[in-house]
Image (cartoon, rainbow, N blue to C red; front, side, top):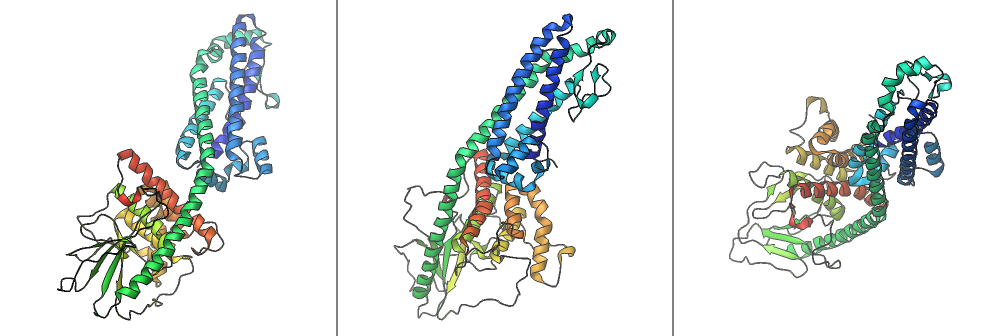
Length: 484
């Protein structure tokens, strides 16, 4: 499949051939009195198309600067359509630079390529820009598109056929499309480059803010454990609301951080029960609290709708950065850990505190080497389950099963990737693929490494946020108050 940048290279190589053919056409008709008026039209067309070529070349160079080394870029511009244009890594970098504009860029570049193909056809050039051999008034020596006008019988015979091709009206619509497509490509490039440093600063601030949230969430857990493990011998449940926190809060108060929680304990209906309220966090006590409902179980409500699914996916991805390697989030977490408490609309994660509650770690399942980061792989599995509304076990097929449960989960997730793309689109699919395969182009895939967290944020959180934002804007409204 030809990529957008590959198509751009093909256009860059085709335009000079078309311009050269127009120049030779103009020279040819200039020798025939009956066709003199076409010479001016062809000269004008050549001039305009030459200017469009220069604009396209400048835009393309501007777009690719920084994505490849300067020497490689110079070689690519000298050799349009060469191997450098087909580099998959360059295509990935271009998608990352253009972000939301990439689809529009590809659609526009494809339309531009159609115009170039039509121009070649009208000038009777083959796909390589050479003169078609069946055209009698053209000489194909040295692959040069130069017409042969010395045979008077030839031009009389070809006059009616070529007249339409040389007509100005035959090119007006195509040239309007060239101008429009070139303008769109230039605008998309300029806007993306202007936004690039802003996006980079936002990403850096976002990761740093998540680090601050993680530190305070861990401190909150230690404080709760110290104070909730009382002498009443009754387990206490602390339910922490998961929030994306990818946008500034409404009040604009960056320094103040609040956690929304719901507390309950098994003996809540005894005469000793009373409402709890702490100043350090938004804490809500329910007089009657139902058993929390796992996300994975099928419910009439709240069943995530498409918009809600995308919002929840973003919240889960952001929560991995906020709660990584804290007691709130196990390394091998799953959707069964995510709860919707009756009367609420947001997801929660629950922890139980009781006297002398030992912190144990399940070592019964050995780490499977293909899964490089279990926390991130768990997110990938959760996004797959969210996509299809079913557990990974329910989506398993016989070919996925092995003696190692982790390998079984990995093989199932790998097999479902193509279906995730079809069901939820490219950005969601890219995020899932990176989580399942841990594809972050980093030597040490650990969330404890700051540069890896940057990669995770830009490769998973950002595309999921863009996916949710775009989807929300097309249908109006947003799914979760905490995402605003």
